[in-house]
Length: 222
Image 1 (cartoon, one colour):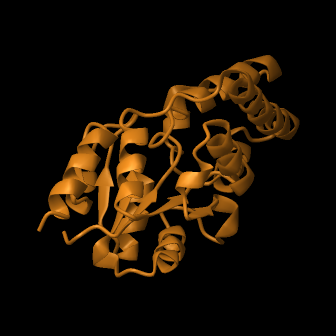
Image 2 (cartoon, one colour):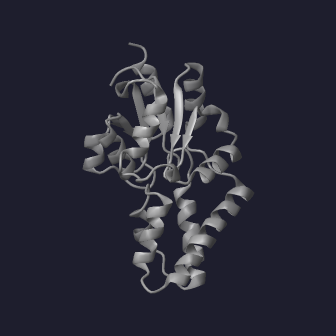
């Protein structure tokens, strides 16, 4: 790993504790419309785009199109209403890391599987928009993670070499995408424990973003 000159952030589960919120919103709405929505089903699609997730819902609940449409619409609405009322819980070390990167003039990009409008809403809600040079949503690429497209696109915006760029991810799909793009990636696990594949494809695995800050400080001392 070389000197870090740009950092690309995933959002859900990495910057904010949103995965549990997504699950609870969907589970509650699913129950109301007569669908069973389990954690085992939900966790399979952590890190994929909204579009791909919606396709999987239609496949999973065959012949229940109307209920699935309600789940997609009302589940998303329930989540946005919750965030509007309560805000989001930022992950440990996020502000310290962003402030440090700011102080060192290190570029910061968000590359999320969530649609651009949701990413913008969440960042604005927590007053983080000004920290980032570029924001890329899942609806701005043709193929979702684990395709490398979003990280290729994000890296091109950094104007630094891949070896000087660092991706921060919590999901295996995101790690696969970054690895395929040839950009070094660190995993900060959220709800899913690191697999052997995750260990093989990452530069490091840390418990929180404070550890990432310390890692970058050390890398940039040389």
